[in-house]
Length: 433
Image (cartoon, rainbow, N blue to C red; front, top):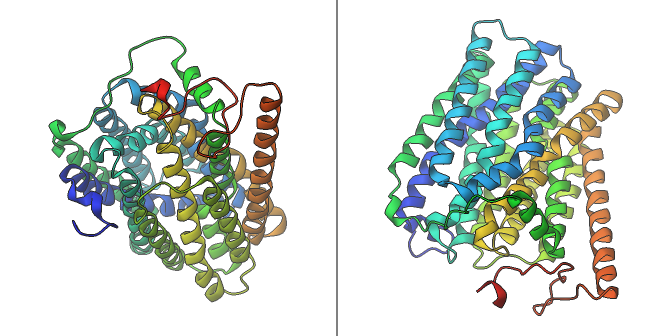
């Protein structure tokens, strides 16, 4: 692995330990994602709207808490912050699993714990994203981002299949309990990290307006606005696999939980390949690649929605997973490699807000599409809306840049990227040195 560009970051002991624990925990996360949606379908009598509401509630806290999560990541020790958030999510999973196992769970219970779980995720995600650079440094950051995604998608490859087996044998509650226990592996990994080898960022001193400062930083960078806009389009209308898969399997093809888990695993094959391809990058992708990858993902989403049989649907899923991960990792790498370390936590919080915060809009909307026009509409409509949103973002940012040029407050940066239209220095500028 030391001689492989794909696995270069695994030569760092701290990152190797971190990824090992994260892999086990992520398998549990995917088990719960499958089990939670299957549980909602059972409790609600197969309601697509109920699944959409659950997904929306789980991601809704990202809209409100992620910016503060990013501030916490910049202000406090990221490793200790992750231990708190991981414990929060573990307890949430264990309680929901217990309710389901004892047979007292109702749809509203799932709604409540979707919000509780989402609160932990909203604080956890910015810290987790920013913590990667502290383990591997800037030189290996693009590779580490790809490998981090690979661990998540290796789990996605395993988790849905495991969930299908557990649900078929014991029920959804036991699958959710499995996730609660899986957090122990990640907590142990965090405890085992060698703190002396971490490249820690200087903690941000407490001051007023620091969340607004992060927003202004992004608002002053046209290329970051486009990357975050792409993340919003992808997250809002494209990354609803757990809902769209459940609807296609149960309501369109009339298959069982085991097939639901199997198709989730098939999709994970493409996602893992995409993450491994991203890990081979020696530098961050350009903005054009970020936009193009998102558009290709939208096209494959539409094609999967048009698949006439379970077999053709299953064959389309790896392409959906591959294009999704290339899109996600490209946007993530682009943002992380083009921000100053002192604001990385807050910028990544805004990135995660865009990526996850639109789900409360997209999931119910796609659920309505599925209720009115059938399960396929959730995929076809999602792909079309994704393209439309990206087009609107590009038009808006380009218009804003041109307006800034005419007013003398912007321009094109020396490396040819879209220029800044506010007087805020970018990472690497001489004024930041």
